[in-house]
Length: 195
Image (cartoon, rainbow, N blue to C red; front, side, top):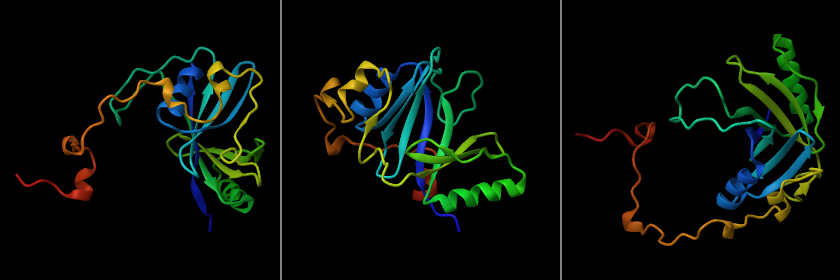
């Protein structure tokens, strides 16, 4: 039985790594735990939880997609690269590779990225999927590293959030003013209001 450990990382794209670091590290408070790059691209990772990360590729010419309502179909520019699911060990990674191969679904060779070993495939909808196994004793969340040969200026400030880069909250919302509005799916857990 394959044991999944969570989402290893979500990989997105950006045309401006400085603004991306400011938002994910300094505004949202996700530590920047890894940065890799070479001429023509960068790849930086931010810690979501003790098991989950989100990563961004920076490529020349990327333009932000227009904002759209969540869940609405879109055509044209996009911002999603692939989703990576973590697995516990190499046995699980190879078991997945063998299962995908047995079905005739395309799957890559096992790739060594230094701190993870990965395979790549596509789901029936064409969604690009990666399965990743962390390399022993090379977890960037415990020991952040920067391997980008030419990191952006903001990355040189370090991996820890720098909240002072954003305006301070002048008036936190008092508890008595906090309203949570029902959204799509809330009726599944809370039932529908009687009219």
